[in-house]
Length: 135
Image 1 (cartoon, rainbow, N blue to C red):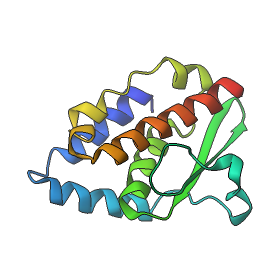
Image 2: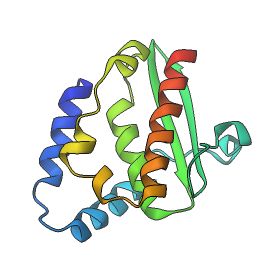
Image 3: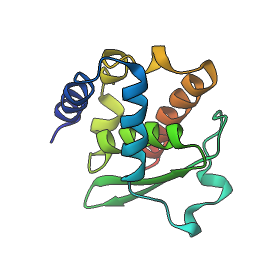
Image 4: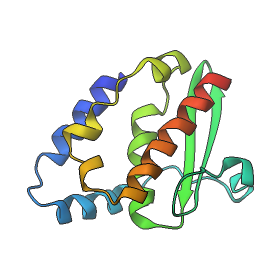
């Protein structure tokens, strides 16, 4: 699937919820099912700066595609990073760098996060794009 197709799928999934409390519950569930970083990956260089909670993100390149794993000590943050991993996993560095992340605004995510979590979201995206630049 393309990045756009995955984002459209996420928008559709979130459209079934009317209340943000339900969307938070869904985010928490998504965080429980994401690719978890190994304990060896929980190193300082994989920590995302700018997040209130601790978030580790690692990236591996296989066959020209990038694959991410992550973990966080906060359940909602874990759900947020799981959404980003879902969008970017298995994509090329070029596609990651060129994409427009329209789903964040369309599902209302950024508007319904605390300022510190919204800053963390921006930091997560920045770290993913930095990995894409480096690969």
